[in-house]
Image (tube, rainbow, N blue to C red):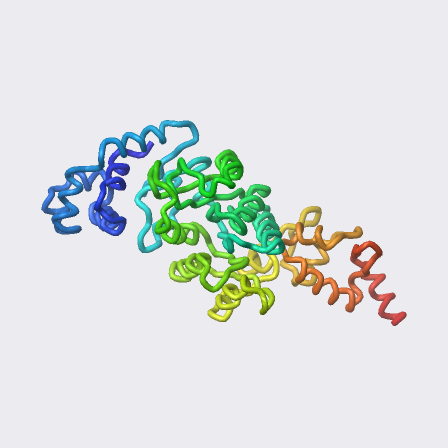
Length: 366
């Protein structure tokens, strides 16, 4: 376990996170902060914060944190720890410590954050889950906030791939909020990770949730917003991502749908419009691997859809699961491919890829 000095520094009441960060950057470690002369500490953060550091945290708070960390599967990560995510050290106010329930190694893996509305539509939930599963199968950890709606769907999809999923929460690591996600939280603790910068016992305070958003974006290479109203907290996460130099992606929707308006604003402001998981992978020059097909050169979007179809009859729902795209985008793509003679519509809502020979013969007949 990390030295107790890191816990003490993070738990001192009245010493802000910004002041903690200033002390660590000045002295290099929590141990050196507590062994430095009070005058040197005061020169960095002032006399009031220096005197509070001398008093230290309340014994009960420190004991509760230590007791939580002694339980199996519970971890504390601090700067310099092998699993402390290096990306978080790049943001303006990184946490001094992270409480982790589950696998701390996931925090150092390449990640994509997926966020959106708590009151998501059924299609939005399906999109979040399928995007997350597709990206997780490519090895990306899926980071989200354990809220209802889009967050929960993203975690479920991420857990089905090899990249798994990480939940960044706005409570202490011993709390689950909302309670409806208790079973999902248990699955994340068993097969992914739950992360908090707040000590055990911290309740779901309103002001802590916007604060945790900078960690959701900070852990990831990019942030995908699936559905968001204009006043959505997801837009806070997107702004954090832009400030941190992360990519921002958004899924467009109907101009008449309130949960599309936040995504449309992001796109107008420079976010990348995406229709499927392959669009995210292409932005990063990653070669998507379609099961059952060799991972060769990067194909055009049209060829990627054909590869995802394989050579047997397939439904739109199956293509949603394979590609991470939404049903509307897939239907439009299939119509285009059908007009080009690359796909044939079958009875029962199924579609089948045509061979090059069949496509050529079709063009000759026409």
